Image 1 (cartoon, one colour):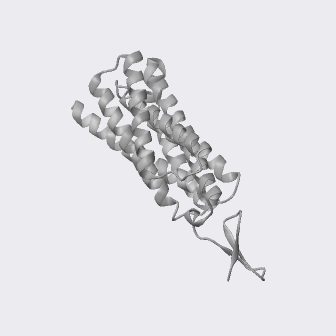
Image 2 (cartoon, helix red, strand yellow):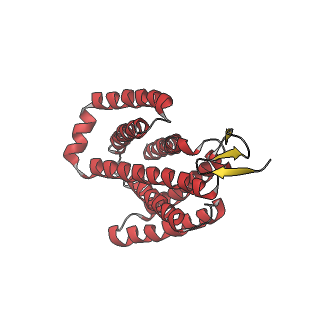
Image 3 (cartoon, helix red, strand yellow):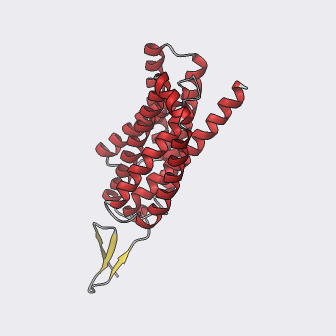
Length: 239
């Protein structure tokens, strides 16, 4: 039986009032898929910019760094609030604007936690990584706004490589960073960005178009996990 595709990602069966909801964003028409991409990339870009700002601020200002390192109870509260917000988002991930508000609060707590961890290091590697990733996700977002094709892994990875290389050279030119730090930031940013692109395409087959907040949260959690692993590796190298 022929059907007409609906703008809300469903099939309205001909000759009946039965509406069959599709199960994932990948099975929707192109405009819906692009909308899913744009929402997720927009949220991820803002999250990366925010965490970069917080981490860099804690590193640059010794007085502020001393305060956040001394107030360990603030870090404990941030971690507990983060866990509580994750539980709440499980119940409100499809309810707007509650899901956006919860995600915003969760991002603030996560940025503070990452910033406190970053304050114990005298290097800008971590801030560089998140800055480069923010630039790449913004460029990918612009690509989805002006392109009519899907974000394919091979094409997006090449685009990410070129963008990261360009901005890494600019960082080296203006900030005169250590070559080793720049190389680490370049490689980590590229691998993390490639992971985001791959994971985003995989999530398209698991989530509905309305679950873009869940997709953003899943991607951000994965990146934070890799971020903490990088901290641990950096710390072990220093020891």
